[in-house]
Image (cartoon, rainbow, N blue to C red; front, side):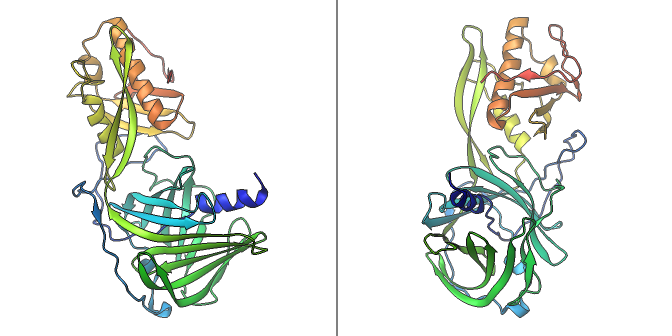
Length: 371
């Protein structure tokens, strides 16, 4: 892959779309986690029925009267679709996994057909910036409270007037090059703020519209031989749907696998969705956990290990012999390992190492993922 193509793909993977109107947040007070982890929040959800959002033609307020909040519209359960030209990664969609209006943070998932990137955006001290970014992130953990030690990448900076300029952590120059610029898209016509990013291999112009966020992006190589364009085409009110392979214990085959889908609304808690999935039975067989078993915490650590903590019913209501118990533990590990793309799972019960009449695990001992 040439250096030029690598740069283009990096730009496309790290793109961010701004979103609209949050209904607030909830607290997951029953989710004890280990030090350094993130507690998920929950918001009442709407119907999972997919709804197309009708585009509106509007004019943004003059830049001198606008604020960052106008171009950082929180949105709930809305998926943005962008059509692209000039590169295989130019088309993409994004979705808000989590958002918190109080802290002015939003976690955005972006899929460009090649990978999924999760970024956390924040308004603070007159800037709108990406404070956390994780590539190849196909699982859904809440990172809103996670603070990276890397310098944030500023997307917009006040005052929102032509000439406002700043330097990115990698040395690139970014500035507001125009305000009140009319941009036509399949979604509608909008007055926008034009933001230009300059680098040695070319430049990128991004157009932000009031109450929409990112409306259009155009990358042009330094020699003008390549142009890559992404433009907003559609906004749909819909849940995020993820496919997961669930592994069930079986006395004859040891393990049976089944593909299932999970629908997530913005601010849904992943461990509760996984808890519901684990309780479901496979045909006439038992589920991975009993109806009374709870998942107290669930996340992927920075060490690449999946950490899951169950309530005591996971052991007391298992009612399995030594062979079938080992199949259950293996199925849990393989299911979580598959979803989180991990090779190890650290399973505890009420924050203590797993222990039953048949199996005793040591402190720090993990289950290996076989799938």
